Image (cartoon, rainbow, N blue to C red):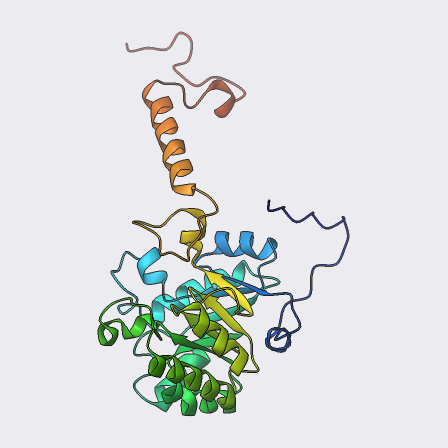
Amino acid sequence: MSREAAPAPPGSPAPRPITVPDIRARKGAGPKIVMLTAYDHPAARILDAAGVDILLVGDSLGNNVLGYDSTLPVTMEEMLHHTRAVRRGTRHALLVADMPYMSFQTGRRDALRNAGRFLKEGGAAAVKVEGGRKRASLVRSLLDAEIPVMGHVGLTPQSVNVMGGYRVQGKRLDEARALVEDAVALEEAGVFAIVLEGVPEGVGRAVTEAVGVPTVGIGAGRFCDGQVLVFHDLVGLSEGPLPRFARRYADLDLAIASAARRFGDDVRAGAFPSESEVYTAPQPFGPKAGSGAR
């Protein structure tokens, strides 16, 4: 059974913000890394206070908040808008922002400018870039510009059209070996952690054991150095069936719908607002005594 963290004693100092070196140092040292997506200030404030280690402003924003069918339509301006909101709610967690589709694929200059905007304008501490060996040179360029990078291999949603859908990667031996090589190349390029998505558990374990930086799994099995879920999957705000790896810890969709229905019932019945929920003036308003049309 899960337990809520006890509140800090009054007057105790706020927890020190988690840094990129802190996350890198968790490799093999524990505890496992806890990472969740966040797209707005209220969610960031709540998750940060709950002790989440990394908040990711994912381009999954497109599917979960903006109503897109995939992550591909998400723009830099949309990502920056939401990163700033999450930043304002974050005090402790490491804030990482996703580089959206076509923000880095069009060349080194565009990638540096866009990644720099996440740190300079959005308040992120690092960016996440999808792709393996072919991103190694880009990772080095970003690090040369003092921009920390989290890698992402396996099922990479920005490659959905090339992959032919959201399919588990690394099922064949050659594909599994390629994923290990991708992760090693990213480590050598300087990433501080790697998201490993949608791979068989054995592949997740092999990648985790092959690299000296933490792996954060999402549908990658039990042997990664940490785990990440999408916030909307976690709390029951997603549409449709969940993927196998996405455990639902709350049913906020039902709670919100119930609250809206109860509010509607009270409004229609004249039960809202009640006398205790209205403002009063010292003297009643209305026609003055003795006044009237003449």
